[in-house]
Image 1 (tube, chains in turn yellow, green):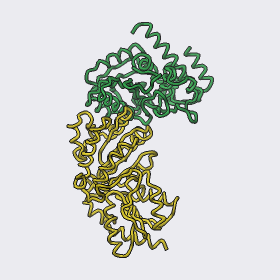
Image 2 (cartoon, one colour; image 1 turned 180 degrees about the vertical axis):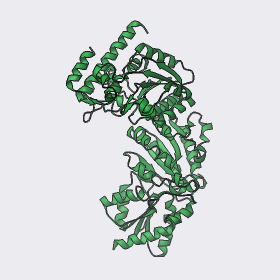
Image 3 (cartoon, chains in turn green, purple; image 1 turned 90 degrees about the vertical axis):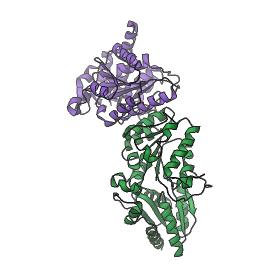
Image 4 (cartoon, chains in turn purple, blue; image 1 turned 90 degrees about the horizontal axis):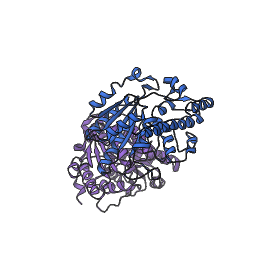
Amino acid sequence: MMYENMEMRQVLAEVLSELMDKDERIVVIDADLARANGTAGLREKYPGRAFDVGIAEQNMAALAAGMAAYGLVPFIGTFTPFATRRICDQITISIVYAKRNVKIIGTDPGISAELNGGTHMSMEDIGVIRSIPGIVIFEPVDAIQLAKALPAILEYDGPIYIRMFRKATPAVFKDDYRFDLFKADMIKEGKDVTLFASGIMVNEALKADELLKAEGIDAEIINIHTIKPIDREAVAASARKTGAVVTCENHNIIGGLKSAVAELLAEEYPVPIKAVGVRDHFGEVAKMEYLKKKYHMTAEDIVKAAKEAIAMKK
Amino acid sequence: MHENEVVFLKDKSKHIRRLIVDEIGKLGVGHIGGCLSAVEALVVLYYKQMNIDPSNPHMEGRDRFVMSKGHAGPAVYAVLADKGYFDVCELDTLNKPETNLPSHCDMLRTIGIDMTAGSLGQGISCAVGMAKASQLKKDNANIYCMVGDGESQEGEVWEAAMCAAQFKLNNLIAFTDYNKLQLDGEVHEIMDVAPLDKKWEAFGWNVINVDDGHDVDKIDQAVEKAKKSLDKPTMIILNTIKGKGVSFVEAAGVKNHSMPITDEQRLQALKELE
């Protein structure tokens, strides 16, 4: 497979196409962002099954629920803010309350919206969706994980929100990677502190690990690709082992991964937790590397947080 | 329609009204106004037009109905019970703890309900999705939907309207229950939706005005005409009366959206409907 060299959106389109060949239930619906999200090419190959509803996300979500009531499996796509906060009620009632099997794809999460700026930077999408009972939230790290996840997402009979970066990103996983939608991935075992990371922040956590190693700190790195339902067992076990936690996320630290981890550990095994992520403010236009620095979301910030968490153990 | 069919549907409408008054009346409060205004359309659909089988509620290729104004659930429940989807006695459980008959339509709870609805504006989109799915599956089903006039103030209704016309969903037949009243007052005073016919026409729909939305024969003729539409979805605008058929509910006017009903009133209403 060549997925590791492809953009995430190319992988999305390629794997969806393979799945559509095998499974006639799949339909792919976009709201005037098919060309941005890579799914426009499916229309030629699957006339009628891949289509646009125009810039009308509310209708897209509820229309998909109606198609799901008919036994089809719609994948709907737009940018993350429009896939979540804009259609929160349609997702809540027509899709999740009615238990309709709709997969919601949001691209450009958080700071990855880059030059689209503050209006398009969803810092709150996980928080918005996470409080809806019964929906799954998945955020892929790289192309290989996304490629392995899509068949599992199809197989799962229920609504899933897929929060995905859409361009090329450094590979974290290899071809032999075994994916489980509901199990967190142990990327590297360690004993001093656990870095729970999701999406684009996994690479920052890996870089942080190199820096921590140089200082004699042995970090454990776990990828939480499914933020809801979070893998309680893996999170609690790692906290028990290391006794200190840093969460690394491309989202407001209110309502996202930090909240999910903190809520869980407060009940299961309280340990010091430090959060690296967007600290409760809106976004702005700039490239990701700039925003990572400005918002304190770099490997160095993770190192600092890790040391603080370790210090709090004493 | 033959005269005997008209008589049957008229009698049936009266009977459904009795069931509605009884189920809401026994509970003591409910959305009675908008349930009573929808009766004739439901009766024409479920007793004449729709290809359905109450003994096989999930039948492939069946016609479907989406009550987009989901608060009219009790009217649909009365019809479904009378059709035999579930026991008529179950109507007495309306809105009681653990009931299968909640205020607003819930496809997971009620046998025969094709789509969950209640948050206004969404049901019509769901119906558009069903009509599109039916065309993909080529199962020749008709998808029916009822929207409220107040509900038509929701922007999503018009997103769905554009979409259904764009997709040429001639298997989608919708009704507007144009009873001119909404919770806060008269529709034209709160936020006017008129002219509804011109609006739907402008959105690319085949539009049929029914001047008396309680005339089963006229409703049936409108549906027959809608089924012949070649490439457009149809909107049948039913000019109705909120609370139709029960004098004290009709008289309550704008207050009948959701109103308390005493046992005395329930019995009086049942008498009126004999």
